[in-house]
Image: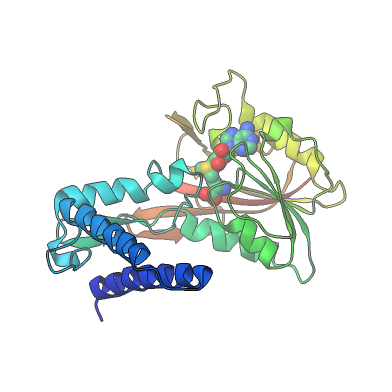
Length: 297
Ligand SMILES: C[S@@+](CC[C@H](N)C(=O)[O-])C[C@H]1O[C@@H](n2cnc3c(N)ncnc32)[C@H](O)[C@@H]1O
């Protein structure tokens, strides 16, 4: 059964289900109500046909081979970081975003989340529940995954967090304004601090180095006796501020980690659009990379 018929069946079942629900509520069948619902269905199908989403035989959608460039562009926008889910605060940054093109779908790129997320889970690697702070975790499933694994997780992000879990607490504020409980076992800061203080994510630009201030703040929020930091940031051969993010080099990363004791520092380099390569310990990248740092306070 193709996607088209699955979608059509789903639509039909929903209408049938709605009709029977209303019948049950009324305790009797009312033809006029059925007529109204039929009208509604016809109207919905007409709207879908007018948009070119349904053909005259009632087939919904179009086979991927017939995907038109305007629809592809619209659907890419709709599913992307400025689309509808994002506008509703429900967009999660996928490690492998795909791109619809006329007549097909391709992998847009493999982004750094593909290594950052498993690296964080491996580093957390606890056999007992931990108290974990996830800074800037709003568009990632890492916090809810850690909570589902049994950890007590607090997300601090001005954009809040869209998914609820009994072991997940959300502080919808900037890290610098957080005044909740401290003494976390682990602070996770995954691809976040490089944006702090730059004019993005609805935050105003600040002249001061908000990234340095954040790392100092985190030292006060983890346990003094061995509280850990799991940090990932964009990394490269030379420090740069590139639009909405900083890219750190070795001296800039050392400066960022001032006061922390580094336990592990790894670098993964972007080999090409589809692959990242974990470099040997202490190797420096020649191009775009991500640094993965485990440290203690
Ligand atoms: C690249 S995004 C999300 C990264 C996310 N951890 C992930 O894995 O996809 C950076 C996040 O930092 C948040 N942010 C920006 N300034 C912040 C601040 N001062 N305190 C806490 N979060 C901040 C933004 O709202 C945004 O959600």
